[in-house]
Image (tube, rainbow, N blue to C red; front, top):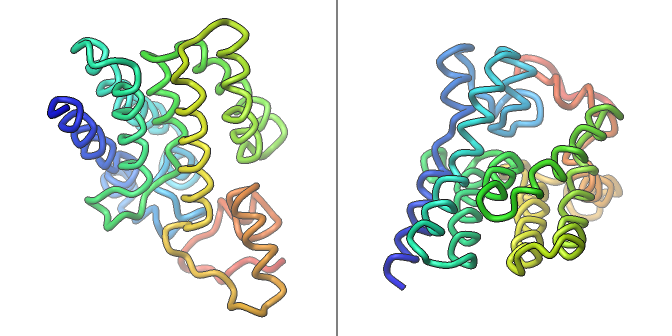
Length: 225
């Protein structure tokens, strides 16, 4: 129990390393939390810093969860502990203690967790992200990938832990989208409030236009509907 608890805690602290934030500071001299979607993520590195930098950022973010999950299996702590350590890394990525809990969305980190636990889940999620990228918006397709991941596992007799892990990841994703790094919602009674909540949950943004959302800059006024 102690080993498992320490590994889960270590997973959270490792996941909290704000890779994209650090690269944004080093290469672009900017705070990613004030650009685009406001997420500390590879996608904002791609849009606002340097497109090539998304590769090392993405690889490190995946490794943050892959390593503790792999280590749990090497220590014979079992699949549940491996999944818990990986999900702790996702939680750290989403709510990093080093950035006062303002982080990313954890999708790449979750995909890294899948590599040692359920390797077929990685190309499965990658497929849905590619579809979303091709259609111009990956946010709803990421949800489709998470929801259908247990079906893939059942079809090919994957580990039982995939279902609770995917469910937990879905809850973490929706919770982070709604919380949105503490970005305020329209006040109660404003008819826009419900629309913003639905957009956050399904599209991971506050406005209708995906392009306007991801390209926002701190020196520009908020884009109009």
